[in-house]
Image (cartoon, rainbow, N blue to C red; front, side, top):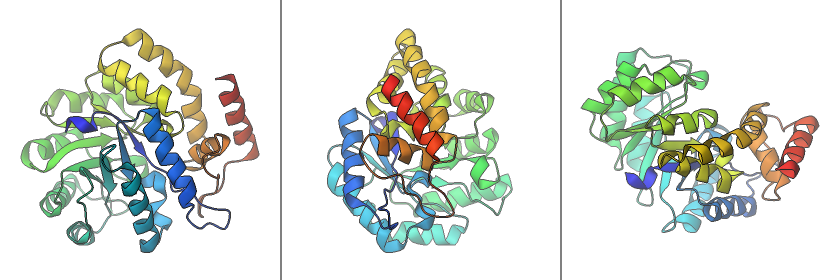
Length: 291
């Protein structure tokens, strides 16, 4: 899966002021990411606010992204949940012909044991017509996929090709890099740890900031992959403030505020999320101006 090496972008779903889906804004964000040099796009991830999208809206977003990006960049679809049977049914009923892989979050709220996580992904992998990337984000799910479980999945479940690791724990990341098979992709799910992950042998990142600053961020990751340490570190230090700012009041409020500053889409989010504060918007504007 070399086409998924580098920077993937977890796309936002832009909204109009009346909270309807802003397709024009979505097109602008997708084109900006493509032009900026990212390696692939992720549709219907957490950043897309998929929890508050109706099925028809999800279909519209997916259709728009596929029309714009198919043949230009690889595509990954987010399909996950905390009811294994429902996830399996969705995988079996969704047309994934335009997608190179599925990103599937670990079951949230239920807080399953490690054995339950393993069996969940075994069922997901068997149902999916395309390769699966597991997604570990304990801050959102309430449970951590321990390194031993990921290693067991990597060795025993053939259709699972990698993990998006967002535990925020570099030691856990290093254990995955040490113990997983060499052809099992270890992808950072944390923008701040993306470069350290790549320098330690990881395969890249599924990023939020990458759609706001695609040129700078994707080149940083490419520099890291080829071992151009001085250039990669210079970019990383310049981007750290932006990463801090876009997550200061939650995701995707921060990245939408940045995209709004760039004239790509509005800052609107759907409840229970709230729009970035005036103070944060001012800080982002100052950062972009100085940059």
